[in-house]
Image 1 (tube, chains in turn orange, cyan):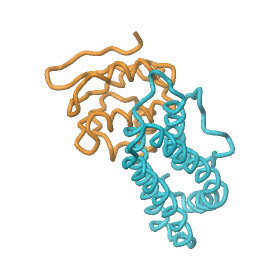
Image 2 (cartoon, chains in turn orange, red):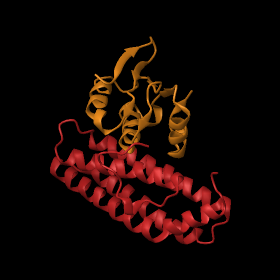
Image 3 (cartoon, helix red, strand yellow):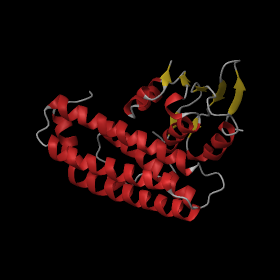
Image 4 (cartoon, chains in turn purple, red):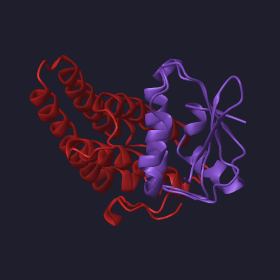
Length: 98
Length: 143
């Protein structure tokens, strides 16, 4: 398993892999499906060194499957270059970023 | 950003990261539609893909329009017409998708949305976004 799933009492915590991209797409979908709409997520980017556009698409789709406008997804621990990429994509307007 | 197995075509690239990354997200969503239509077992739900696409189309177009306003882009009105075509095209087809009563009709409309998005990206990037990026670079926008 490239992804590590746990809970912190409030949120489903998904610890993402070093290479977050198309190769883990199926695993990401499986890990985040089965939770009811309204589930809160914490996406831990601590290990992520590189990501691709497929990963950005996955984040958007998680936002939709978990409630769209009312979704609550917190992105934590992105490295500087990953944070910059998320900001280039304007994702700081769509997700909570710590 | 690492290479994706399903990269945006190089001809779509404008060498302006602020815009290129956002076009890549749109292309990733286009690719998700294609995967879902191809019957891929792990495909995302088409309705979720389209609601995400609608959201990101607006996010991207608003970003570009704010950039044009901030830098006094002389072709703003013309560019906005192209943006409205994308809003209307994706929005109209999405509404048809939601109204579809049969799975076959849903899939047919989904294919039309994917085709529309690909052609729009191809034409809009080649015709008008290249000029916009040249202008934004000259104004050091986002640096």
